[in-house]
Length: 106
Image (cartoon, helix red, strand yellow):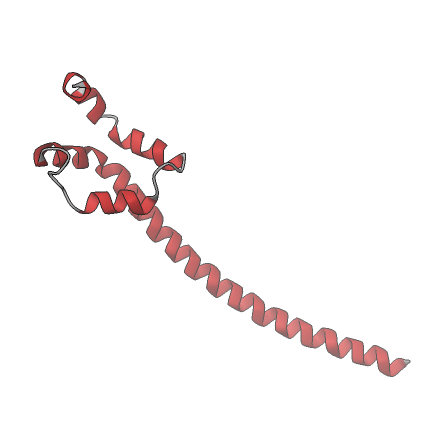
């Protein structure tokens, strides 16, 4: 009943409502993405579900882009960590050599 009397006002705020629920960790990213995958007429008429998804599209797109940016930055971080570990390994070797030199002086 509430949906019928405030339909347009609620639909225009769907993306903001979803974003708030996501930011408060009340609904997981995977849940939103799964929900977006298929319109089910079990709980609402298909047309209402489609319209709801249409209004949520900007949030879903943002979520998907953030996910792909996160994945690419994780890959870059992994590569940077590998390079840093290699540099650290080189530094450790120099540190060991320095200790051996110091031991020779004794």
